[in-house]
Amino acid sequence: MAEVSKSTGWVGWIGFAGIILLLSGVFSLIQGFVALVGSNYYYAVENGTLFLFDLTGWGWWNLIIGAVLVLTGIALFTGATWARVLAIIVASLSAIGQLLLVPAQPWWALIVIAVDILIIYAITAHGREIVDNG
Image (cartoon, rainbow, N blue to C red; front, side, top):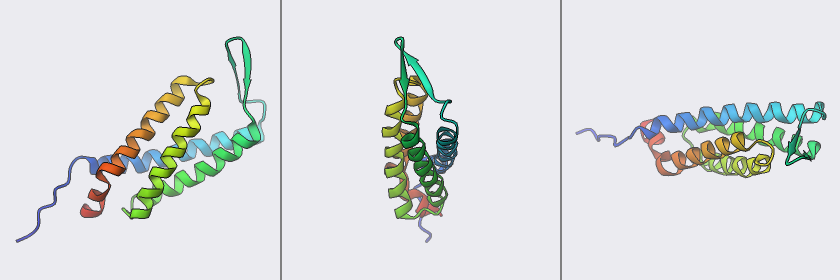
């Protein structure tokens, strides 16, 4: 008698997590590149004062985290345990990095943090299902 798989709809959410990691990585790569090449593009006025980022450090952070996000998003589709662990770590780092943007871009930062939390939940609660169905 064949064993019946007990998968839920969260298997699709893990695929969603992989795609979002890819997109987030591409966005981070673009932000990092612009921050390094065009230093006059990132600033914000908050409560009448100018809020400046350390563009070089922020640019390199975005380039590195973006590359890792893209590679992790691709690896997540294999269902490998190491890819799921790395995805959780990278999504956590992405959420923490977004905290730096809250004063300048609160809505964008809060949306990205919420999506990162959803990614972490999908992978931690239902990550094994992608291996069972793979």
